Amino acid sequence: MLKIQPEPYKIKTVEPLSRLPLDERKAALLRAGHNTFLLRSREVYIDLLTDSGTNAMSQEQWSALMRGDEAYAGAESFYRFVEAVQEVYGFPHVVPTHQGRGAENILSKSLIRPGDVVPGNMYFTTTRLHQELAGGSFADVIIPEAHDPSSELPFKGNVDLAKLAAVVKKFGASKIPYVAVGAPVNMAGGQPVSMENIRLVSAFCREKGIRVVLDAARAVENAYFIQEREKGYAGKSVKAILLEMCSHFDACAMSAKKDAYANIGGFLAMRDQGLYEQAQNLCVVYEGLHTYGGLAGRDLEALAQGIRESVEKDDWIAHRVSQVRYLWKALDETGIPLMRPCGGHAVFVDAKEFLPHLSQENLPAQALAAAIYEDSGTRSMERGIVSAGRDAATGEDHKPALELVRLALPRRVYTQSHLDYVAEGLGETWRRRARIPGLQFSYEPKYLRFFQARFKPVASKCPSAAFS
Ligand code: F0G
Image (cartoon, rainbow, N blue to C red; front, side):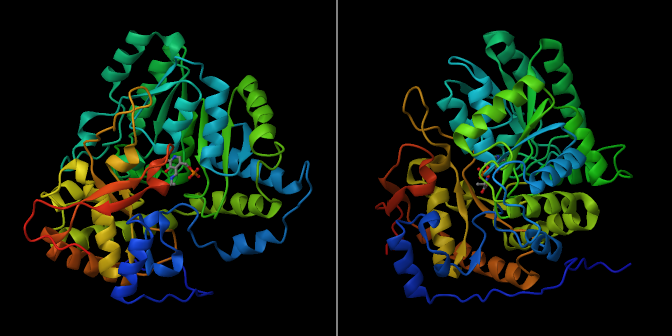
């Protein structure tokens, strides 16, 4: 049997790429305040900032755009979108939103009352903020291994049931509007959650009368990991596994800019008629009418097609994960410290190990993301103390155990030689690691600071450090 697993597509339209020379990349980094979010895309060569909304659509998605029904109310495109969500995710009611955080806003405002606590398997930036803005707080109930980059557990995103039970006991079920399960867990390196764990969490919550809500942004990847790793699932399709996963949840919040190969979109889907009515009503306040949710009819068409495509055959998702693994392996062979095991959407570099001369206050992951850009024009994202933000009650920095740089792969966009280039570029950064300076904030916005903060280099204790 042949070992190479080539892309299950060929290229029809091309977008030219060019790489700025080193001095211009250095100037761009300074202008951007060492924040990769503030670079212009023309300054970036290989863009691994995110896999969100950066996907290449298929010819069927592009064709579907022409069918877009742009009626303000009751567009046919809306009904086609709802049918696709019902078929693939299995929830009867669907409220469209402009993207995932639109769904998070509506969900949080519908269910959370001041003083409530929302347990979840590790925070996600926008999700936690919406919980806090609604008056709630987040309680982390992920298994402890998820905070350890070297642990090789196959389902490192699992909920720790004892921790969950302790949170419910401490606050009481009436203070817990729902349990939020991300599958896989973005901030933990894309680690999946097992079907067994989902089943147990769901049974526990049902017994306590607490809702369970899935963050479904990359649930197709999670279903693929279950097929690959969990006993009894090897013979099942990703489509069937995804439906089974969803059957254990009361609702899901979805950023459809990921698995669904779209460039924009999201939804909130649920079984409960009461929550549906509430969510539809808040949709008109924050997103637009409940039959378009901030999206054009043509976006809804691209989503309907993309949602079906994401599970129509297992090759798509198998190839996606194999691309991420290819990059992971190349970096691992160079000796670069990585979050283990490899996740489904991105490779996460362990910045604490990469830059041991920097303390967490020197923002090692932010410094490393800036250095990676400088060396090769590759754009990545900080996922450490900057992303973790401040405690809403005390104003102190959250200090996460994980200090990671994420290299996320857009779907169907880059080829193997792009990934070889990225690996070679990180090899350069690895060789000069002892001279990479730390950073400090020069501007810090109030919400989701990682998006818009600016930084400047700090004088390092490391004598060989060179500052630009
Ligand atoms: N949940 C998860 C797990 C996510 O990864 C994201 C976005 C959201 C919710 C919010 O969705 O961006 O459509 O509003 N993640 C992007 C990323 C931004 O780069 O990981 P959104």
